[in-house]
Image 1 (cartoon, rainbow, N blue to C red):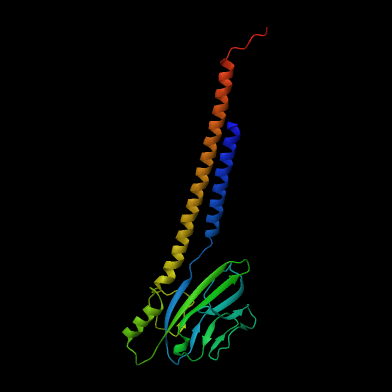
Image 2 (cartoon, rainbow, N blue to C red):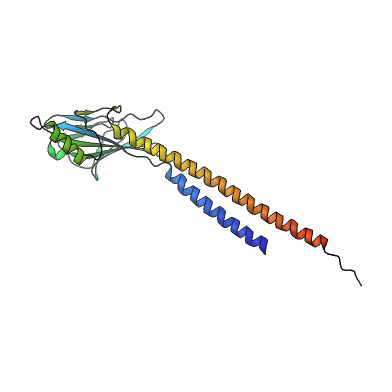
Length: 226
């Protein structure tokens, strides 16, 4: 009976450990989005080039959104499939976005989601803020800080493919995601070792108990048959 109870407790502990490990492993692929704040001169064209991806990253398709509205999906070397009629915004076959004549209503967040053939995802967010030649630079910076949370401004009409040295948030977020993944991995390894240690101690206790009972039975005098 004692042996059966110990096995039941051991199985319960193992199930809890397995569920915890599965949950942590599912959290490992989560990555932060790269945010690029850009101020754009009113009336000028703007191009957001598709960000560079690793060589191993085989692109399946690209998805563009403005806020939560789906604008287009693009497959490599195919014509973009448009979901919203835009007069000034165009999407190229290579996944880049082009705004012919930037206006104030074009301001806001644009999300570019790149999905690989194996299901891996990279998300890039460009936060566009308009400014005119008559506006003071300080006013423009204040407007950027309101629209784009905790990110430095970049006065350009074209977003670079390679991260700029001043784009602190673009560096901090991926590093934070990588650090979180490393921490989760360490936690998983720690839980595995603890589970193994508990199981080993539980087995030792069971075997010690069995050995003790055997020794006690051996010490008892055998009853003589009448």
